[in-house]
Amino acid sequence: MASQEKITVYNLADLKNTSDDTIPVYLNSLKFKQSHRLTDVRLALGYSALIIAGACFAWDYKLGFDNTKYYTAAAVALYTVLNTALTLWIWKKEKGVVYVGTAPSGETITIATSTRKNIPEYNLTITIQPKSKSAKPETFTITRPFTEWFDAAGHFVPAPFQTVLATAIPVVGKLDPKRVPAEKTDSRYTAEMLDALSAATSSEMASGTDVAASGGKKGKRRGKA
Image 1 (spheres, rainbow, N blue to C red):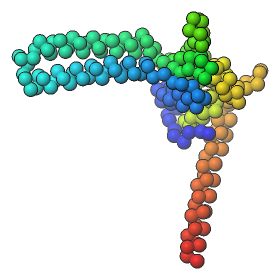
Image 2 (image 1 turned 180 degrees about the vertical axis):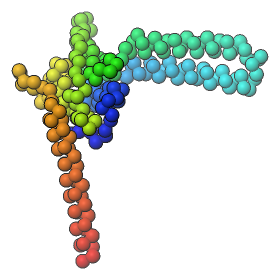
Image 3 (image 1 turned 90 degrees about the vertical axis):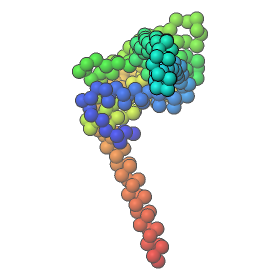
């Protein structure tokens, strides 16, 4: 089923963000347990810095600068430390990670995504940590064009995108085998196939609307009778 929302197909940020947002939805539907630790730490650092800035403004407003200058100096130093920690956390730790989750079988997968300027391709770096923490994690990358799951009008088509993930990530393929194509079969969707999927979805929605409208008219006629 194609999304009814359209994006600008020439906007790399929109293409990436829409694809990023779909990864948790798909994997969580397969019973992955998502970890929000990276986001929680980022929010904690950000809100802590914001609270310090707000407190500094409040006591300066009420008590005056001369009476609070030492507290203000300490607050500025602490704010700088927290803001630096936040920047380093995003740059060094998150590194573009959009999803961390654990499969029902115990493996943990981490997915980081990126794009390159003026190149309409989606780069995924996938790390799989086996259930045994002593085992060495496996990391690999895949690069696919956005045209595989966005049609010409800018609709996102989930099925091809899910096929890419299920084919590339073994643990996902095991949980969603219908998205794994047969061996030696090209799993890529052509532009015509994407348009057909999008058109089929639109037709289904239009048919549903017509049926609902027809039912409403019949109800009114019966009421008049």
